[in-house]
Image (cartoon, rainbow, N blue to C red):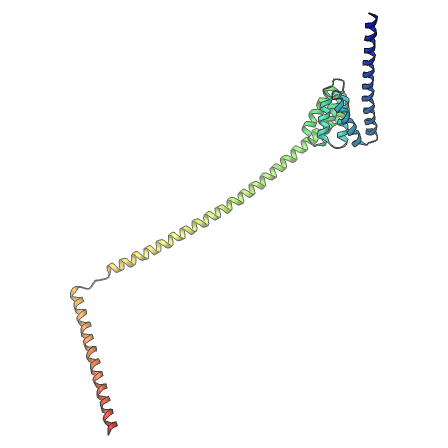
Length: 252
């Protein structure tokens, strides 16, 4: 029995020694990170807090401190993630964590989420004057942001309407030009068809010669041709006579 108690006592001593060593190491690392933070060496503080958060992931205060280091380094998304991770630990000051999350969203100009976390912080600690002030300030910023966004949307819509109106006018002009051109082509074709019909009608209305008139015209043409032939023969005869007279004179 005494032997058993001795062994049990040794085990307890070793266990307590290990726990003390573990807590001492955790406190030492966190202390070094805190010193770097107080010296405003936020990059080093972030690195040390990050190492501690990996080794002691259940320690909410380390996540909270790492979130503060991220915040100082303007890494607001990372800060929000660490703050939310710290909320898993019931020992952390929930009101402060929620307040810091609201601050991180405020820096991101995400005023809607910032208001929600400031409000949640006030629920945890209604006497927090800073949370009240930031809540009201952020509410004004959100209203101003929404008004600016609405104004920008209205301007964008007006610009789109103007551009659409201009496009519609251009399309109307193109359609009108096309319609006018087609109408001109139709009118020109109509006039050409009308002229052709009138010419055909004139040809149809023109009096056609009878068979007797045709024969008479042919007889006249034949007579004219015969007269022309006779005249041609007479001229040739005179020319021959003149040539013969010239030859006699030359031989003499």
